[in-house]
Length: 608
Image (cartoon, rainbow, N blue to C red; front, top):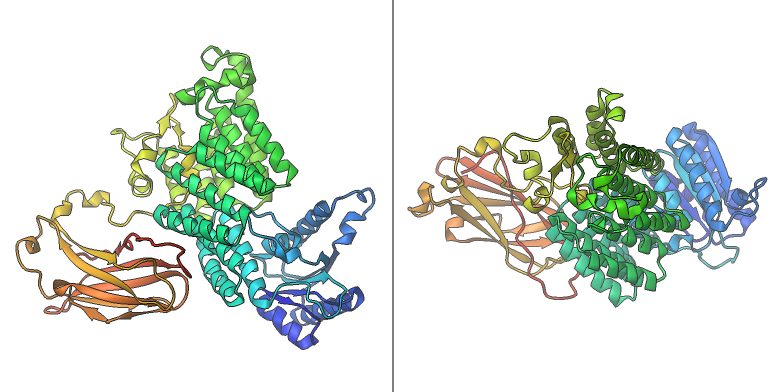
């Protein structure tokens, strides 16, 4: 993304637009800026054969019967109109009249933000060209940040949108570029938000230790620059890490909510209120109906559709699990206190049917909002829970499981697909969770999995908070007849503190034979370990001998996630015994001493 503080020549602007597909122009009188935008749009559109669409922010509030719109409502109307254009076909879109300073919005973990952030989120996956004009008539003054800083904020916004959609895979490259852009611009505030979003991405992918480390770093950086909303967001994400173990921390979530409120961040307070409510929703006697209603009102005040959708989803889920048809024991006692006029144990058929119909309405509302917000992650989970809790809905579509699995597959969520498989197959005879779930989730979380009398799974709420990848070294079903103690493993240990750019970090490589392996009672043969960097980093030496204590020096040249490959060979026979890959996160700096965990090796199909 590029920001242009002043009007420049047409050719340069056209090249900028064709390269980045996004151009923001400010620092010029309205008439000159508008004429310039029109000229660039016509030239690009004529050559590419694309239609041109034009919007003015002021016009969105001046339409017949809508003159009373607030600036925020007018901005939302522009974003929605643009979103409709972008998703239909490639075109050239000109949005003029964006208030100066709109680029200064901070990504807050949701897809909503300033007008410019909303335009970027609508434009993120489009093939269209976007030209934005900023209303600053003062000649000689730039209304927008410098090129480097602007690029960083745009990348952060796009990364946040991908995380909101439930597609964290696409966020990683954007965040690495964002860190670099903010470093070049000297923007410590932007750098802190980049580290925060990187930690959030790691939480979504189930990398709890990496997420915890990065979120702690982000929180310290927010404190250093006085960014109180960011500190609150970091505290909230750290609190959400506890849900992965099946034991949420409501007190920490309540503290994050208080921090958001003290910082004046209403949207952040709404999200913290939602996760606090979700963490307590299954407690006996908790007034979940009242709290979900309050949260929904909070999100409505800040026009956050994504937050509203997740609120409806969890409200419907709680209702569906308290309808007297085999819900969890914890929620069974809450139905009476939530305003139904009786306890779950004594609820009649009429009360059960009414709650089920209300849950259906809430699921349908959540599904519609997830579709509007373009959040396939929320849409897939809502489709799954709706199908499980509403047999009539499920039986209307014989391909219900395939359809939901397809949505999960579209964002690379293999864990979500595994839950669909479980729902379709039912409980296993031995009571053990399937391999695809066991290798991704902690045992403590899977122990909270329940089943209704009808054989439908009561999937832990926390399962939808992450998209975990298989744990390295987790034994596959076919490996059960090969005891682990008869195999040799490669162990990687990071010997220094958190790696930072251009500073060598030491990595030790060991071959560790199991008790039943022949090498456990004999000297380790003179194997060779070959190291290769798969990114912008150097690793030295190129070869090492594990028997002599192989040690490598890893020197990254930029922050972000770096992949390393180690190949263990038997030089006597030329045989590759094992090849593993490891990921190491590199941050710009570390505010305090820290001993990181060793990089997790990724075993290949070949083993010693």
